[in-house]
Length: 352
Image (tube, rainbow, N blue to C red):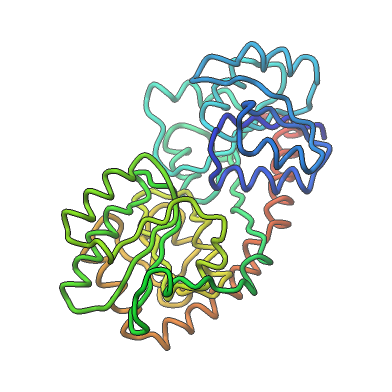
């Protein structure tokens, strides 16, 4: 099967990690990317044929993509971002499959856009549900959970985080990993940390990630008097070691397709407290492999963190079960097999 992947992102997030895993397992596939995409050197390093296309917004790059599709003649085009979906739909020339990672519902004006593709690969049942409500027939949606390579997380050496933060041995380190964007819920975590500190819980939080919300979070931390309590670490290349250094991983998303960072924490053996948003309950089983709290409520997040800290033996048992479950359910080979099977079905079933 000749596949042309299209990704318009100029950032590296979960979707780009999944695309790289797909390309690594299928080096004969090709990919169209912006010339400055951070995924480009990684794909080229694998020997993947990369086609630079100057995508900008919903329109610029469509004609170039159309010419590329005509020239390469793929059996299938796979779009990995919302803008890639639009560009590929307008470009035409090959059956289109769209990867959908977000659990928010497409708007009424976008629904015409969702009628065109041959099929969708949804990252969770929650995402499939939103697509179905938006009018996509369920038989045109396949659910394929993210895959995470376990090796970097299983035996990672913890980084000396306590030393760098200058916090004492009794401090409980709470960590979050994710882009600094509103739907990741980091503002809720900051408010929850204020509740913990006012309750006498000696917790310190670190947030690894970068994004447009940094300035807002800095001001919130200052306003709540949490300087030295909540630390913004920026983008990190040592996430496995960071997860090994913290006591509890907190994932406070308001919306979440699945929660790749949660799986990474599970593989690292780090206890998880997460919001029950989107597809996260498909990853974390409450009080079996972690703790779930209602999304967007700082008091509930603080309560969940307090329980995890106060009952650390049980919390660590959850983490042990979570590591075993993550290795069994979220391996990259399983994701690749599921994705290729979805592509094949969408190409061969005539009545979709």
